[in-house]
Image (cartoon, rainbow, N blue to C red; front, side, top):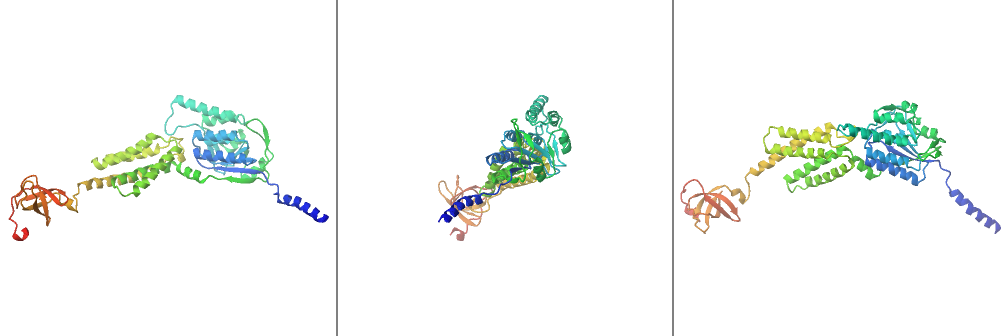
Length: 444
């Protein structure tokens, strides 16, 4: 019994000990920022940092390759990085990547700024879409951007004067230039070597305290976008926003000209709603939206009036210019509608709209080809006298019809059908005198 008790006690101690996992390595949450900086990417990065804080990760690794993006979204990311309780490493990778414009601000905000060989950064001068900024506004914006950069670069112990030149002079730096001028901390070719090189490295946090990184054998946890964020990222593409807007308007236009088709109106409505939602994610220039709508108005006028293509050409020009000006953002190819796409859409839309509308307006002049309405305008002959207040009989299009008239009409008189009401025709005298009186057979 004593042996059994000892065995039971040993089991109670040994089993929990065996259930404990082996000591795991450090956890690093990896965030991939490989697109234009906008509100959705800012939300994605912020949620990744918050996840790292909740799970007590040892570090956050932001792998960045971006041409820049929206200033407001960049500031949201920078502010979250500097406030992070978990050390943040920003790594420009792979070779050939860049972190320019807004990406430069994010790189220098990191606790550890790293670049892979063959990468670039810098060119962080603020720009205002396609507009030329007034000199006073330009100075204000440049000074504000430079001051914002200084506010955290100095606390990171980096070269403030050189960093400012990326804003004031739009300078760019290779990985070695950035390392030699104390803008970044490390140049390393792979993520694995990066973690090895940073292990046991002492860093200074934004609040002034020092911390030693423990990244040996780190377990990388990829932080993925949610399906909603992936969908919104696609919607935030200016080319998609432009296509949704144009096809939405075209769908509603087709439905209005051909009531009852249902499908064009339904799809057009959905496209319009998605376009409006997409525009909430982008700094849209609403003057450009008006230009796109003006293009449709010019196409309609081209169909109605003979302008020998002048109105249609003006519509194509308005649509292309509206597309190019749609997003009021820095001149980054990823943040603008491609002119090839704008032209490829504008010309077919012009042809479809003009041709379709001309067919619609021509159909208004067509005579009704079936039913009693098709008798309107036909010439017939009175076979039974039409007197005041009394119906007569007329022979029209090979058929006998009851008829009325606002004036007496004798039998044999030619008449024109004015209106068809139920089974009774309203007629009026027509050119031509009485014809031969109806035969006895016709009077039956």
